[in-house]
Image (tube, rainbow over all chains, first blue to last red; front, side):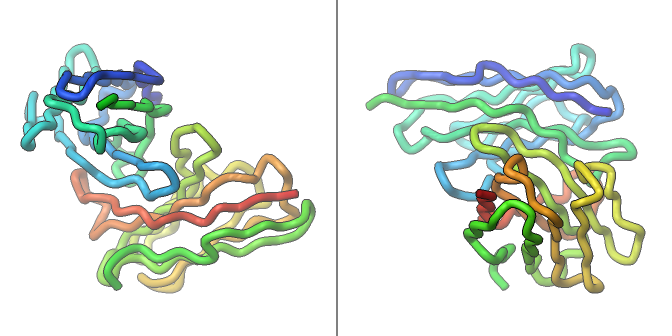
Amino acid sequence: GENVEQHPSTLSVQEGDSAVIKCTYSDSASNYFPWYKQELGKRPQLIIDIRSNVGEKKDQRIAVTLNKTAKHFSLHITETQPEDSAVYFCAAAGGTRYGKLTFGQGTILTVHP
Amino acid sequence: GAGVSQSPSNKVTEKGKDVELRCDPISGHTALYWYRQRLGQGLEFLIYFQGNSAPDKSGLPSDRFSAERTGESVSTLTIQRTQQEDSAVYLCASSLATGVGNTIYFGEGSWLTVV
């Protein structure tokens, strides 16, 4: 089955800096890669996603890049703010598993004012 | 409803008891998923339902776990003879369909503590 590895497990940045979280996946059939943000005690919420037919997608301060050959994808947050502090999860799905997201272990992002 | 609704929000049960967790998906969503999240961990897939198709149960950790869904509405996740390792947040999610890119929306979860 699919295996998703996420790094780093914790990330601490100063307000205004950029943050980058990286994930690798094992199943070349995966073709959908969402990122979720989860605040303490809250539900995971989709912040951005990318399909395998594109290499990059941006939404304001958030961007995701995908390298299908290397089987890795990354989340980039620019001009970080304290409210960006949360746990971020990457996930992969597709092929015969399109209904089943396989999640990474999460990255705890802390943005210091 | 406005979002995925789960109940109870919190449940404390004694080891060996059975528990039932309920999920109301977003109206019109044909796909429904259950995930488990242990403290400080990622989300583990348990089971998903898509319309009238047979559910994909490949993530259920043991035969103590089962789930049902009535048509395209409410789902119930049942854990029999609960064990302490079952303590986790059980998250339900739904999506319009299960094609690639159908956004999956999560509920707030049911926090289960087995003592």
